[in-house]
Every structure is written in C-alpha cells, then in structure tokens.
Image (cartoon, rainbow, N blue to C red; front, side, top):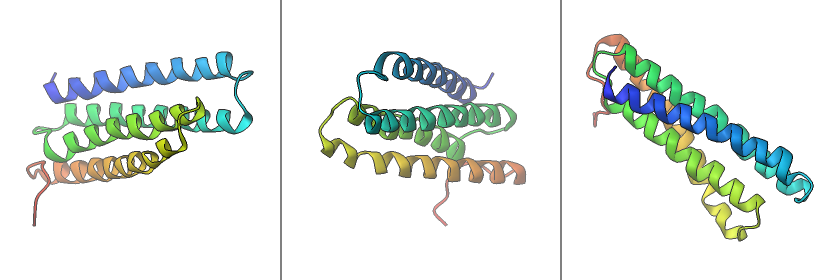
Length: 138
C-alpha cells in the first residue's frame, strides 16, 4: 500500500473511532451535566468530526487508486485532519466551558474543511487527466 494512502486511512479510522467515543461520552456522560445549548455545540462537533473522518478515509482510498498521490490529495488529507482538530475541537472545548474566545478558532477549522474538500476534488480531477497531482501556481 502506498505510504500516503496508508497514512490517511489510518488517520481516518482513528478519527472515526475517536468521534464514536467522544459522541458516546457526550450522550451518556454529559447529557445531564451540560445545558442544552452546550449539548447542541458538542453534538455539532461530533457530527462534523465524524463526517470529515469519513472524508479522510476517502482521501486514503483515492490515494490508493492514484499512480502519484501527492500534492492536491495530501493537501486534502491534512486540511481535513486540521479541520477536525480546530473546528470540532473548539466546539468540544466551548461546550465544556472554555472561554468564548475559543470560538474564534472554529471558523479556521471550517475553512480547512472547505479547502480539504476542494483539494480532494482537484486531486481527483488531476488524477483522472493523468496530470501530476500537485497544486500548481499557474
């Protein structure tokens, strides 16, 4: 298996397992302890965490099927992983009582998510054309 594919498949699986664990903790350990608004923030974090873990698995699978999985696909994977940490992580922190200023990080995670999906699309387009799979400056 190509190294980059393996990296994103492992990351995706690990982030998915973590999303399940964090979601279960919220459902069973926090529901009675947090206000409904905090639970809603926490649930949003879990949902985005899980969907983007699946996105990381998709990146890994595309890398396995691509002759030269680099550039755009690597960018996609790292942006999705960064988005999980920043977006979902900041929502978990806010739900658990972190200062409101922590919320300034959340949009950065959202931007990373969007960039990750766009980079994945570009990587697939480039791979389909047989082009070198890296971001270009033209």
